[in-house]
Length: 306
Ligand SMILES: Cc1ncc(COP(=O)(O)O)c(C=O)c1O
Image 1 (cartoon, helix red, strand yellow):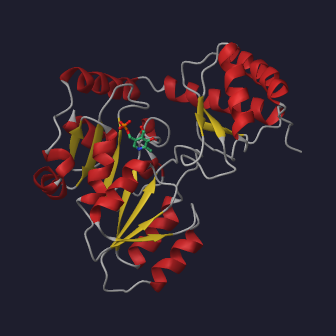
Image 2 (tube, rainbow, N blue to C red):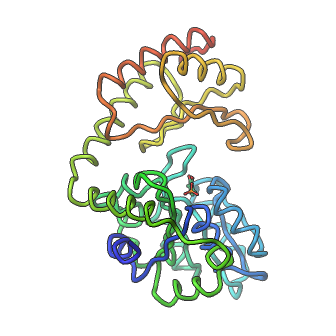
């Protein structure tokens, strides 16, 4: 599985863990240490954040997905300080894509190493779903790619991929790898099978994007705010806890499951329902979801955006 995944991602080596959380946390906590600068988009997943906190490095935040803000921050830092930049390829709550070309340009200019969490971009972006680094042709320059099997790879587990030397270093130095049991054979086999399907049956990938466009059009027609998500991680931003709950409950009663995300999972005022459209949804199901949303909006007193 590790060899197959390394080859798929275009990295020399890969280590598989029992959860994406472990892989993402160790990618940061083993790479950065006290005295280094850890430069983060504040919207990174908690698994990267926990790695940031465990590392003891100095935390420097730039505004979400804002490369001018990153450029300003990098210019202000001590040129001699070791720097690690951590981003999500696709942000799990917003669905936003990290602007990798400009980010890599800045990382090169200021000699920062880059770690990308591809949990939500594997299977979604890039050739046959190889992820955001592949989509923008920056795989080689990115130091570590980490992610989860719990999204497009339809299993549980996680991975971290990079140079052979770095992966060997993580294997003997990362607490998340040393002190946690390996993935179960069944979970590894499921993820491996998904990886094969991803490469041999591109129609699922195409179907996923058709479904994304269809659901996005429904949300637009209903005047709902989907935070301009350009990916199948489609949020419906309500901005009010009780209305969010009322809509969630109404959808549930009509047979639809969404995930309610409230602060601190999202910034205050961004209370939302997460929808994850997949390649297996039918057009008819998505249309019925649109009808259910209309009923739910009325029940929850949600007005269309003007
Ligand atoms: C962006 C991101 N990274 C990492 C993880 C952690 O993955 P896992 O659930 O496999 O521990 C998740 C969520 O599950 C996630 O959304």
